[in-house]
Length: 321
View (tube, rainbow, N blue to C red):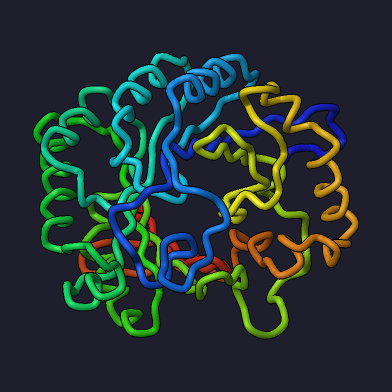
């Protein structure tokens, strides 16, 4: 985390929600799930909004990662190609998004490689079609895997390092036994594979009893900047309904919003461990999400793997023997 005594903060990760529409209706989605409560309308980002965002990002004095996803599926957004093309013109900007890969056809694979998009994160739950398609309603695992493998094959044919690929599986109790097969299937082609802690709809809890680590200020408040499809800035990626409105990039510069009294209040409350009065934070454990609890090197099949456990996920990366 950056030195908290500095005069100004700048984000190093910007989430640009191009749309909050989705082509799936996952059972445990915190926004589109059947039991989820939507507190904001569905919509798609206007061109003037993402142009304003890219213009502002281009003036930031530090490297930034731009992720064009949010509560929806970015490949549904008709202007995504144009947005990504413009974003790649910004020097030093890392560009990517998370996708369910249902729409990642051959044309998209070509585009991602041709334009050297930096990273693609796949959200795929398990290796078995019956359970995957049950939890991810509207999905077809066979189709998804064809799309992903086509992108992998095209990268290999063109000897292209980009886009870097990551894979994430939610550790539903019913599919946790698929974790090892999942890692063995995708890690050979990925920079990382993660098995995420399952959280029921509406929950931001990562443990049931006492926290496994001492409290620290949430790092999301110091490095992340989330822009909704209408230009409204929310507190963080856990604020899926934009209940904390920090302002709009259509009316204020990024650095002004990110150093406003509104977000300073949240930072101060976290730094003094006084979050009980913050409705979004008092029942949220994500402040500890990436703190390592255990780490080991192991072998999975022919791979030497570094396995790291945190409260939010267990990650796997290839390691040297």
